[in-house]
Amino acid sequence: MSVETQKETLGFQTEVKQLLHLMIHSLYSNKEIFLRELISNASDAVDKLRFEALAKPELLEGGAELKIRVSFDKDANTVTLEDNGIGMSREDVITHLGTIAKSGTADFMKNLTGDQKKDSHLIGQFGVGFYSAFIVADKVDVFSRRAGAPAAEGVHWSSKGEGDFEVATVDKADRGTRIVLHLKKGEEEFADGWRLRNIIKKYSDHIALPIELPKQVEAVEGEEKPAEEWETVNRASALWTRPRTEIKDEEYQEFYKHIGHDFENPLAWSHNKVEGKLEYNSLLYVPARAPFDLYQREAPRGLKLYVQRVFVMDQAESFLPLYLRFIKGVVDSNDLSLNVSREILQKDPIIDSMKSALTKRVLDMLEKLAKNEPEQYKGFWKNFGQVMKEGPAEDFANKEKIAGLLRFASTSDDSGEQSVSLADYLARAKEGQDKIYFLTGESYAQVKNSPHLEVFRKKGIEVLLLTDRIDEWLMSYLSEFDGKNFVDVARGDLDLGKLDSEEDKKAQEEVAKEKEGLVERLKAALGESVSEVRVSHRLTDSPAILAIGEQDLGLQMRQILEASGQKVPDSKPIFEFNPGHPLIEKLDNEQSEDRFADFSHILFDQAALAAGDSLKDPAAYVRRLNKLLVELSA
Ligand code: ADP
Ligand code: MG
Image (tube, rainbow, N blue to C red; front, side, top):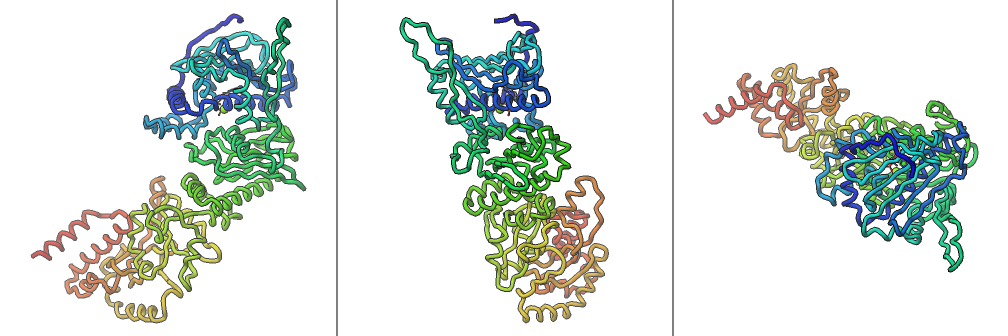
């Protein structure tokens, strides 16, 4: 062993300590995955080297045959992995093997409950990565040297996986990384050629470069032990270049875990070879779970880009729209140049046509999942539904397709779950119904009891209930589905079209005539608070309701804009009253104009409250109501 200089001891970032603890305690039943993770990293390191060497061939000096070697020592109870990839500098080692760089990790870790079972799911959102070495090892040594750096700039990292790690500068003859796992007592089984070979076949067969193990050569008595020979144990070809029919589900799944840095199996995948004007292979995956940083702007997203099998970049975001940012996968192009950059990708027309083709693939894959595996799709929707709702605004061309993938809560189902598709809705539509009715609001509990639904309930017409923050915005981009227009039931003058019979309509006109006087009185009493007063056809049980003007912002959009500090144009609601309601009859018969005014304002404020709005002058409401109560009991 060479001399170590500049030795220092550093503490792990708090989040690393938490992750280490979590991992060691929750993955004990699946220990062997440590090897998959370390091989995955070695393969990434080789990919990076291969790419950097395109511009700087000298980086390959001292070994252009890129590979990973796994060996073991039964006596010392160690397993060693060695790669001749890009390697790490001292700084690299300190940041990559001492911190978790993902932004938002600390906040995320605060959600840990301490319940091992529940928390183990959280690991899935990180991937397990390098630290999984400590599942089987009580000490890990990493020797690394960055490609292109002199032998004297090797680094030795060492840790027992507790609070801290040591780094020192050492000589390292070859570039790349060697990791020595000092197995824990009880984990001796891993220092074994057969065991290692099986694990590699099981999890890492898809790795595109050779993974070698020492050849099992029997030592013959009296003869000198032969020099070490190695043999490749994996298939060592890029998975996405192989024909679909020859690839097993397990292989697709393990490949996903490698490129997706995920710990769980994907929900679905789509593997395609495109030939013709453009030539490329793509392999796209839908993860089972949303990463915790799905809504962070700077969170990494995008596909792994290869050009003619050579890895070119991670997180190439130009191949898919933002609302599909959760998709993981690989695209391998024959048309792009090897020195393509992010900037070029943004402008290249080739990318545009690939992007629209890949987007279609993803939407098709989701359609298939929804159709063939509705239970799985439910899970997908829980995780990614909110993001999919960004789709219609971003991707005009695929609006109808995306709309078909949306799921909503509805009056047809008391669970409040978002499970109704627009196709389901239309299949249940009433005869003569040529509209899709919806209501937006703050919460399911609030909208499901909204007075706006009364007439729909009476007539047995289904209404979609939209309560996500993004919904009102979404609906401003969706105007129709399958030729049927969307109608916000809280907006404008509700026209039920053919759903109202001729008699209904006649009766409505008659009542409107009859109540003209009341309408005028109410207008005078409510004055500036309303834009219009009219007789309602929406109500069966409630005395009054506020409708939003056809062009006005809804409550949700108004609240969002106000919260972001924007000035929102004041819009006045339409006051509609239920002519058959006893309170309205009482109001109509009220002789004192003073009391009539108080009464009208109370009804107006109540309607605002029922719609989930807050009152402009709550004290006035209470004062008027109390006055009335006193008079009533006098
Ligand atoms: P991830 O692979 O998801 O980035 P890991 O915990 O597996 O997370 O690895 C952390 C980082 O450590 C890697 O991103 C890489 O920068 C570095 N690293 C790990 N193993 C190697 C290796 N064999 N060669 C070079 N760098 C490595
Ligand atoms: Mg990794």
